[in-house]
Image 1 (tube, helix red, strand yellow):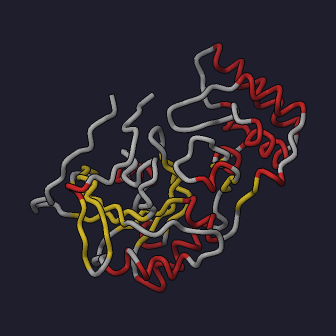
Image 2 (tube, rainbow, N blue to C red; image 1 turned 180 degrees about the vertical axis):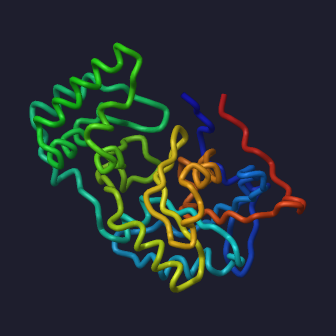
Length: 264
C-alpha cells in the first residue's frame, strides 16, 4: 500500500498568482515519454448548489492554456449537484453498528469502521448484499485478496466520502458526499463552454479512479490519465485546490518546485 503525504500541500514556496487566480506548483510527472507540470488551482470553499461552470470560469479558465488537461475532484461536482446526505437523515441499524467493528482504518480515510457510512451503503444497496459483500471480503482477506467488499458493492458505494470526525472542514463531520451524477457530461459541458479537456476523478493518497472525461480525451487511456495525477496533486487535506491544471512542458524548464516535507 502506498502512502504519499500527510498534511496540506500548499507551501508558500510553491505559490503563484496569475490573473487574480492563486495556484500552487505541484511538480512534474512523466507519461508516455512526455513531461507534464501540474498546478493546483485554489478556490473558495465550495458550498452545496454552486454552479460548477461558473467556478471553472472564475478560477482555472483564467490561467488555462491551449492543450491543458484539467483534473477535477469528484467531491466538488457532487457538492454542486447537491448529491449529498446529512448524518441526521441516516438512521443507524443494529447491522451497521455491528459490522462497523470489523472494518479497518486506513491512512486515506475511514471506511466501514464509520457506522453512518456503512448504514448509507446498506440504504443504497440493501442489507443482504452488504452482508454478502462483508462475508466475501473477510474470506478474500484470508487468501490475500483485498477490496472484494467494495468490488461487490460497486463504485457508488466505494465513493461515499464524508462523515469524517477528523476532517479539516466541519461540514464533512456530519455530511457525506456521494458520487457525481453523469460525470462524463459534466466534462463535456466544460469543454463546450471553455474548450478545456477535463476529467473528473476520485483520488486519494492510495488510488485514483477516472469517473468521467470529455470527448477531447478519448485518445487517452484511463491508465495514462491516472499517471498524470498518481501522486494526488489536489491534496488530501484543506488545500481547497479541487482543480488541477496539467500542462505538457516537454523540452522546457519546469518552474521551481520544493516538495513538501513529510510529517514525522
